[in-house]
Image (tube, rainbow, N blue to C red):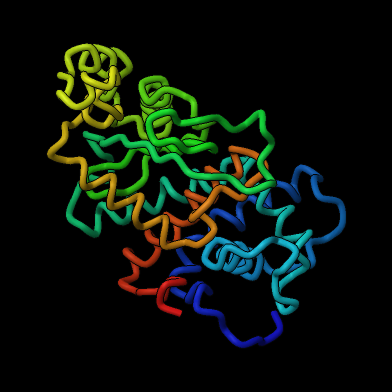
Length: 277
């Protein structure tokens, strides 16, 4: 890899060491299967650094600085890793390490759910958008499940018109599939607690349900945990609005922001955000 000036978003050696084994194994598996054609030209660390640069700064792929690999190559790896679930796998592995560092069991036993509606850019097809009638936002809705430390367990991106209860059920199914120890957070529990949730007087007057599914899993007293996580990801400028054409790519951008957070937790490092610049 040619030497270049470091960007604030670049991975340190210690942080890269946490990610490299999964990416190296992915590339080797593709090579063994005869996928990808000619011998890879670009260093995987530079590819991941370029993706982090987009995630942190919010620039369009075409505007990647020239000292990174070509934007078409970087975007190609981004979509391939999204399709192959690599970001999900890395997030899962790092979550276990971060929980162990915090003195917790590697697998969580509880979760908190929340949703966030955001506006989209012109890249997003109209068919993937909707209107959040409560927040008066036209765009998409992000649903996430975190553990009690605020670490990401599952994420779904849908049209903003999707109901929180439906998103909550899908999120719990995804969390159970990825984190088997969370089997107690089941579909039936969410539905039963959802029916018992009391309505706030202000929402009764307006004819709306009290709100998001997190209040029907661990209760309002833990709401701040998941809201803090949404605050963390919003420090990555690419997530200030939904710029992705595909909802799956949007979910990957959220996972990448959390991967950045998790590697720093495990290595006790800090990285400036766009607000610090």
